Image (tube, rainbow, N blue to C red; front, side, top):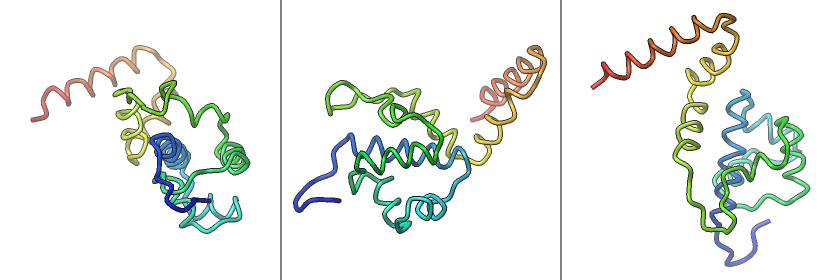
Length: 132
Protein backbone atom coordinates (compact mmCIF):
# COMPACT_ATOMS: atom_id res chain seq x y z
CA UNK A 1 0.00 0.00 0.00
CA UNK A 2 1.27 3.44 -0.84
CA UNK A 3 2.15 5.66 2.09
CA UNK A 4 1.33 9.34 2.26
CA UNK A 5 3.87 11.44 0.41
CA UNK A 6 5.76 8.39 -0.86
CA UNK A 7 6.95 8.75 -4.41
CA UNK A 8 7.51 5.87 -6.77
CA UNK A 9 11.09 4.75 -6.95
CA UNK A 10 12.89 3.49 -9.99
CA UNK A 11 12.78 0.03 -8.37
CA UNK A 12 8.96 0.17 -8.14
CA UNK A 13 8.78 1.18 -11.80
CA UNK A 14 11.25 -1.54 -12.83
CA UNK A 15 9.37 -4.29 -10.98
CA UNK A 16 6.07 -3.07 -12.42
CA UNK A 17 7.52 -3.13 -15.92
CA UNK A 18 8.74 -6.69 -15.40
CA UNK A 19 5.26 -7.72 -14.20
CA UNK A 20 3.69 -6.13 -17.29
CA UNK A 21 6.24 -7.69 -19.68
CA UNK A 22 5.82 -11.20 -18.30
CA UNK A 23 2.04 -10.92 -18.08
CA UNK A 24 1.83 -9.86 -21.72
CA UNK A 25 4.41 -12.43 -22.84
CA UNK A 26 2.25 -15.28 -21.56
CA UNK A 27 -1.04 -13.73 -22.70
CA UNK A 28 -2.58 -12.96 -19.30
CA UNK A 29 -4.83 -9.91 -19.02
CA UNK A 30 -4.70 -7.46 -16.13
CA UNK A 31 -8.17 -8.65 -15.17
CA UNK A 32 -7.11 -12.31 -15.10
CA UNK A 33 -4.04 -11.57 -12.99
CA UNK A 34 -6.05 -9.37 -10.62
CA UNK A 35 -8.73 -12.02 -10.21
CA UNK A 36 -6.12 -14.68 -9.41
CA UNK A 37 -4.53 -12.33 -6.87
CA UNK A 38 -7.87 -11.35 -5.32
CA UNK A 39 -7.42 -7.66 -6.10
CA UNK A 40 -8.97 -5.11 -8.48
CA UNK A 41 -7.43 -4.84 -11.94
CA UNK A 42 -6.77 -1.15 -11.17
CA UNK A 43 -4.34 -2.34 -8.49
CA UNK A 44 -2.49 -4.38 -11.12
CA UNK A 45 -2.34 -1.23 -13.26
CA UNK A 46 -0.85 0.70 -10.34
CA UNK A 47 1.71 -2.05 -9.75
CA UNK A 48 2.67 -2.12 -13.43
CA UNK A 49 3.17 1.65 -13.56
CA UNK A 50 5.12 1.69 -10.31
CA UNK A 51 2.51 3.92 -8.65
CA UNK A 52 2.03 1.36 -5.85
CA UNK A 53 4.74 -0.76 -4.32
CA UNK A 54 4.23 -4.52 -4.48
CA UNK A 55 4.54 -6.19 -1.07
CA UNK A 56 6.84 -9.18 -0.72
CA UNK A 57 3.94 -11.59 -0.23
CA UNK A 58 2.06 -10.18 -3.23
CA UNK A 59 5.21 -10.34 -5.37
CA UNK A 60 5.58 -13.98 -4.36
CA UNK A 61 2.01 -14.62 -5.54
CA UNK A 62 2.62 -12.74 -8.80
CA UNK A 63 5.77 -14.78 -9.45
CA UNK A 64 3.91 -18.02 -8.84
CA UNK A 65 1.01 -17.02 -11.11
CA UNK A 66 3.31 -15.78 -13.89
CA UNK A 67 5.55 -18.86 -13.49
CA UNK A 68 8.82 -17.04 -12.86
CA UNK A 69 11.26 -16.99 -9.94
CA UNK A 70 11.14 -13.92 -7.67
CA UNK A 71 14.57 -12.94 -9.00
CA UNK A 72 12.97 -12.34 -12.43
CA UNK A 73 11.50 -9.06 -11.19
CA UNK A 74 14.90 -7.77 -10.12
CA UNK A 75 16.86 -8.73 -13.23
CA UNK A 76 18.47 -5.70 -14.80
CA UNK A 77 18.49 -3.65 -11.60
CA UNK A 78 21.72 -1.94 -10.70
CA UNK A 79 23.03 -2.57 -7.17
CA UNK A 80 21.65 0.80 -6.07
CA UNK A 81 18.26 2.34 -6.74
CA UNK A 82 19.79 4.39 -9.56
CA UNK A 83 19.23 2.04 -12.47
CA UNK A 84 21.34 2.18 -15.59
CA UNK A 85 18.93 0.53 -18.00
CA UNK A 86 20.33 -2.11 -20.30
CA UNK A 87 19.24 -1.06 -23.81
CA UNK A 88 18.82 -4.72 -24.76
CA UNK A 89 16.24 -5.11 -21.99
CA UNK A 90 14.14 -2.27 -23.42
CA UNK A 91 14.24 -3.76 -26.93
CA UNK A 92 13.30 -7.18 -25.60
CA UNK A 93 10.45 -5.73 -23.53
CA UNK A 94 9.06 -3.78 -26.49
CA UNK A 95 9.41 -6.85 -28.71
CA UNK A 96 7.57 -9.12 -26.26
CA UNK A 97 4.84 -6.57 -25.61
CA UNK A 98 3.81 -6.67 -29.28
CA UNK A 99 1.49 -9.41 -30.49
CA UNK A 100 3.81 -10.15 -33.42
CA UNK A 101 6.86 -10.29 -31.16
CA UNK A 102 5.23 -12.76 -28.79
CA UNK A 103 4.09 -14.92 -31.71
CA UNK A 104 7.54 -14.85 -33.29
CA UNK A 105 9.25 -15.59 -29.96
CA UNK A 106 6.93 -18.55 -29.49
CA UNK A 107 7.33 -19.93 -33.03
CA UNK A 108 11.03 -19.34 -33.72
CA UNK A 109 12.51 -21.93 -31.34
CA UNK A 110 10.03 -24.49 -32.67
CA UNK A 111 11.71 -24.41 -36.09
CA UNK A 112 13.64 -27.69 -35.86
CA UNK A 113 16.33 -27.04 -38.47
CA UNK A 114 19.10 -24.58 -37.60
CA UNK A 115 19.60 -23.61 -41.25
CA UNK A 116 15.94 -22.58 -41.49
CA UNK A 117 16.22 -20.47 -38.32
CA UNK A 118 19.24 -18.75 -39.91
CA UNK A 119 17.19 -18.11 -43.08
CA UNK A 120 14.43 -16.50 -41.00
CA UNK A 121 17.04 -14.32 -39.30
CA UNK A 122 18.51 -13.35 -42.68
CA UNK A 123 15.01 -12.42 -43.88
CA UNK A 124 14.42 -10.20 -40.85
CA UNK A 125 17.83 -8.53 -41.26
CA UNK A 126 17.04 -7.87 -44.93
CA UNK A 127 13.69 -6.30 -44.10
CA UNK A 128 15.38 -4.07 -41.48
CA UNK A 129 18.03 -2.94 -43.98
CA UNK A 130 15.35 -2.20 -46.60
CA UNK A 131 13.18 -0.21 -44.17
CA UNK A 132 13.46 3.59 -44.24
